[in-house]
Length: 65
Image 1 (cartoon, rainbow, N blue to C red):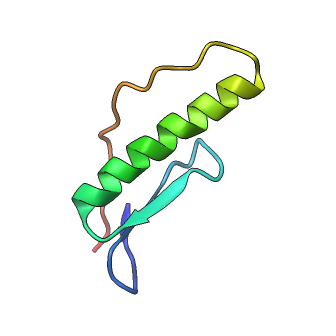
Image 2: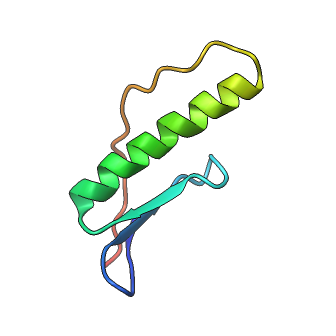
């Protein structure tokens, strides 16, 4: 995660191309990135005709100020 120049925060997952989000607060962006990861994995799973991966949690993050 990093602080946006225009306010708020931006989060991305380098290992999941195109998986990113933004939010006004750290709390918001944490929730949104978890949702984005879950959706990404579900779409990938559907694409491969496999059972959806169940998202459990994500916590490691780096904040640049």
